[in-house]
Image 1 (cartoon, helix red, strand yellow):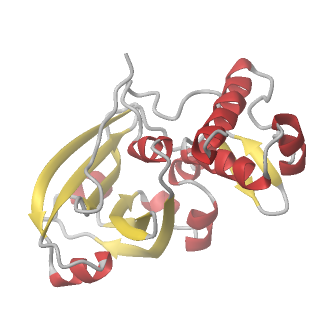
Image 2 (cartoon, rainbow, N blue to C red):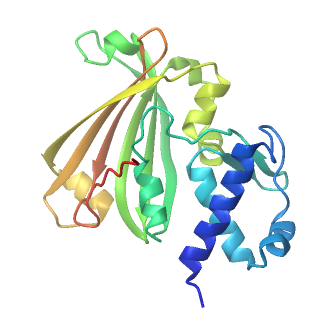
Length: 233
C-alpha cells in the first residue's frame, strides 16, 4: 500500500501537469473534490492535501463555496531553478500551515532603511508558519501602501503574491540574505522555545523598474528544521 504522502504528491503532480498543458486554463475551476476523488480513486483527505500543495505553489486558489480556481500555468518560482522552501517541506511529507496574525499601516522615519523603498508609510503584515504543529517561521512583510485597502481576512484567504498581482505590483527578481541572530524573549515566546539562536532571512523583491516592492524579514527556528534550498538540474 502506498503511503498517503506519496499518493497526494502523485495527485498534485498530475493536476499540475494538466494545468501546465492547458487542460485546466488559467481562470477556470478545477473539478470538484468529489469529481477528483472519483477521477484519481483516492480519498477526500488525499485530494485536499494535493490542492493545498498546489495552492502553496501559487498555481490554484481555493475559496469556500466557490471551488478551486487556476491562478497560473507556470511554476511558482519562475525567477530561478531553486524550489520554494514550503514546497520542499511539503514534498518531504510535512504539514505546513500559515496564519496571518497582524496587519497595520506603519509610519517610516526618514533614517530608516525602509524609507527609500516605501517613503513615509507602508503596509506591514505579520505571519506565522507552523510546521507539524510547532511554530517554525515568523515573517514580517513590509509592502506598498497600495495594499492599504486589503484586510487581514483577505491575506488569510488569498496568497500574498496573488494580492500583489491583483494590485498591479509585479515581481521580476528577489534578493535574499541570511544571518544568525539571538532570539529575544518575545521571539522565544512566539516560537514557544528556550532556544537562544535562530536564522534570519531578509528578502527584497523588485519590480521591472528595479524598485523594491516587498521587504520581508523571516526568522526560522532551525531547532525545529534546518533551512534548505533545493535546486533542480
